[in-house]
Image (cartoon, rainbow, N blue to C red):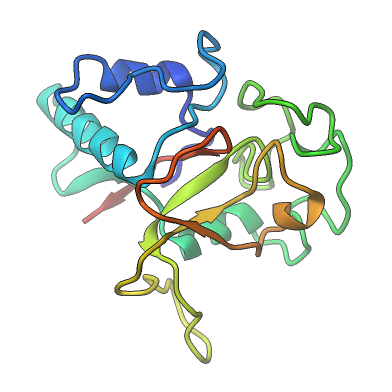
Length: 199
C-alpha cells in the first residue's frame, strides 16, 4: 500500500513532537501550513519518523502483526506513479500548469497543499511535482533484462528520489526520471510519501 498524499507538515509534527533525536518537528521552510508537504527532511530523518510512527501505531493496537510503515522502493514508487500508463506522465505525453506544481506551472515558487491537482488513475496525488520523494533503496544502475519488483541496489552512497518538485522543469517530472542524494541531505524541494507493507 502507498499513501495517497505526500506526508504533510501536520502529520510529520504529530509523529515527531517530543522526539529525543533533536529533530525539529516543524522543519519546513513555509511553516504553519499543515496541509502542505513537509520538506527539509533527510532520508535519515524519515527513518526516525518511520520508527516512531510504527512504535506509536503498534502501541495503539492499530498495526497488524508483521506489517509496518516504510518508504517505497524506487520500483514500487514508479509502478504507483505510472498507474498502468506508459506515457511520460500519468495523464499523458505533455504537461501544463493545471497538471502539477512545477517550475513554469501554476505556482513555481513554493509547495502547495497536497491534493490540489487531479489524482493519477490509481488515486495517488502529487506523484509529479510539489516535492521530491525519498525512496527506500540505494541509487544504482538498473539490472539487465526484465525483472519483477526489483529491490534496488544492495549498497551505495546515495538514496533514490522520485517525482521532482515545485522548482523543477517538465523533463524531471516524467514518471521515469531518477534523482539521488546523500541520506543526510535536506532542502526545500524534498519530502516523502509513506508505504505500508507486510515484512
